[in-house]
Image 1 (tube, rainbow, N blue to C red):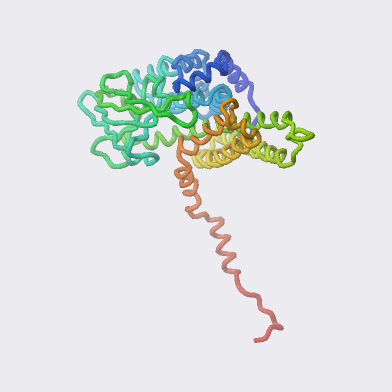
Image 2 (spheres, rainbow, N blue to C red):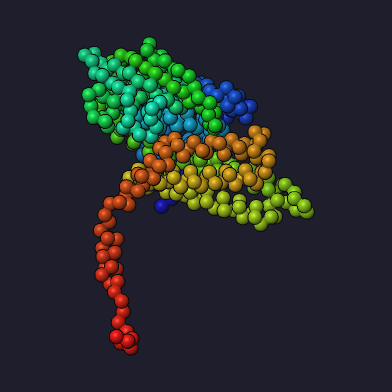
Length: 400
């Protein structure tokens, strides 16, 4: 059910490429060294219409653009792809879906045009993937909300203007969460600092604490629905992560193959060694199948099929695939691949985060497994028939 690229996707890719045309390797390395992404780079993407055109067809119809954005930005800088994903698929995605009043619609316009840059805060110091354990609170007051909390491992916190925070509504049950729009320059918001990370270093990862009073328009959507909202938004993030990973894998195989063709071992190229040639062939094949699965998932979603379980399973498979592929390609390079003079070690480090961010492997595996524990009338019926027929055959000539 895969589809060819449409003209609009080709045009959109050209738009993204034009937005990043001025970013060379030296500039990208400078971001990595600084461990921060300039806010202006997100603004530049917006100025070229990258975010507005992503969302113009709608959340689902625009999924091919989501994939195109992730692929094109990943080729330039993986941290940029991560920051743009958070801004587009979670922050803008939440506003596009849930904005209800004039202030929220105005913020959406600002986000589409790059005047506002969003990041997402869910994880807290005392917890990880268990969003039901969130302790940051939201107390409703006569003129709005008082939010008290702390969020950790927030991507692109340093370049953002707004935090989309998941807080517990005071006095509610353990799963009664809500989404809130928190301007990061509001008095009472403190950026506590940043963490040094193994990969994706140009996209900073920070911790923010807040004790603020905000107006009624700080609440995005309905109270008590925050967990459901977050789970839906993360589906789009997971698709983007898959596209980013597959781009890293494709670049790793391309570079490793070029090296194997040129590197001379003994009396011939490294590629002449069957072990190396087959290692790269298997890597290329696995990437091709995974990329076809990504395209098929997108096509099915655009056609109206649900994709929550499918994208969870896809992310698990893509993470496994690309982690192995980057490892194999680094091996082909030998000692060179382990040095920072070559990008293999960077892709190798970047890929590891995907098994944690956007839904840890364990969480997604449980989501996929939830379909298997439900009764299936067809196969339950097949099993009943097989069990009924599971009897020994009588042999008339056998002794009694």
